[in-house]
Length: 146
Image (cartoon, rainbow, N blue to C red):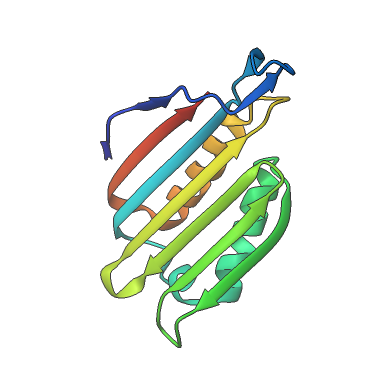
């Protein structure tokens, strides 16, 4: 497994401004963005081509991780072809794209909140999806946004 360099962002995402235009309070939103390029997937061939199966699996994985799905959209590129899908989360999103002809999946899990740290839930969801596809050569990025 190749884990690529850790990235940490420190951009300001919210500020209260006084009538004179001066910043009074600055607040950063804690977030975690997990990104995976999953090469050589040795499992999940059915998930890579079956839109309904992939959507059901992802929705269950989201629920099992303790995250809240608020909507989803999955699209098949044809029989035996890849699938692209996203689940909008109250906490942010899950997105994935499959290329069964290359045994390749891209995976994107992002969570953020002003009120709590959902990092462990994001890690759980990401791990579940990684286990489903069992990539031989995963390239992983972890971006902490705060």
